[in-house]
Image 1 (cartoon, rainbow, N blue to C red):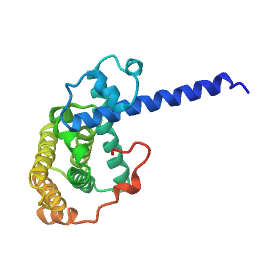
Image 2: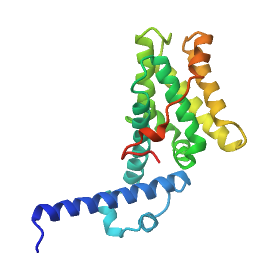
Image 3: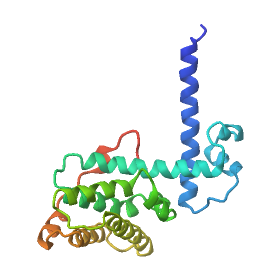
Length: 220
């Protein structure tokens, strides 16, 4: 029985989506390994797709790596949005996101290396962690929870702390990642004007389970 044109089209769309996803996963692995100067042939071999398939989705290798990085940043950002959706206090929202992001360095080391190998992109990306941090810090300012004069500088401090924490955890595998992330989050809250006792309490609250909030756009 011959397939209807719509069925053939749907099957073709699914195949294209699988090919694009395979290319992006391969690129993310290469970014995590710091190997972004490999030829396109090596990327397609890692993705187990044909060379011609690459050009059906991307014009250049750089375009692929850009898409791979944006996918990582936005997927994790969406995950943080989901797990903090029911939290009303902007200070707690910021602290929860930072504490969870700090823990990813140890729990998702490949994702962590993608972030560390693209530190400047983390700050300038239109999607991902930095825009969400800016949104959450601004919400804290608007609610009177944060005393921050320059939101962009506050975002820079938070991003710098997150990235340096990641490098520290890679360099010191024996260090407690949760304790380090919580201490940094507490210090950031205090820098943003949250009273010390409140900052300490907020950063000792139980964290939501990210695995329960994962959807199709997993950050892994």
